[in-house]
Image (cartoon, rainbow, N blue to C red; front, side):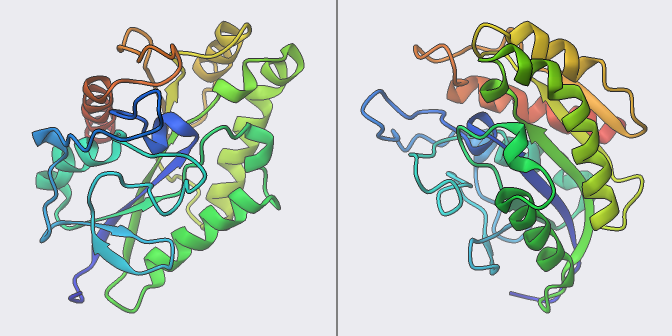
Length: 237
């Protein structure tokens, strides 16, 4: 890879960020890549699980969320929608399906891996770059039990503080997605997400986007829409 600086975006959370678009009930991805998610080898790269830059392709999380089948997520549609404004991009996939927010607390494996990957992306000897935003879509796993839903807001606010502190970026933009699916306490988690009012934390709402027949994961088409919504939110920030 060449040595051009990149605008870096961290993609994190659980399965709807990792992407299940086009994955059928037999856990097989249909391989359909919408035009909005097409690769752009000269402008959109991704940081692999081994911390190497490579051309970004769907499924973006295939070597990160390895215990599940990954399909289309919002990352590539997001990247294609912001690339004209930010130039060369580096996507840093970190999302892992089925994970609760307590697993993303500072000191836990998922959190530490996300920070490690973010720092590697910046310091990388192939030009590195500057982190522009964290895109976060998580919360479905916290909608099953009332105590988890009640604790969500405080845990998310702590996550924001810890990430900004560890990356030494006190005003890092964070775009979180209010969940569109989940269990019994989904509305409680959604309210927690929408009530967070920290500087440079923006919430977009996935509710109303089409879900697959599992009533949990966004369809490929919905993931493209979400990517566009994330792009609009970032460009507005």
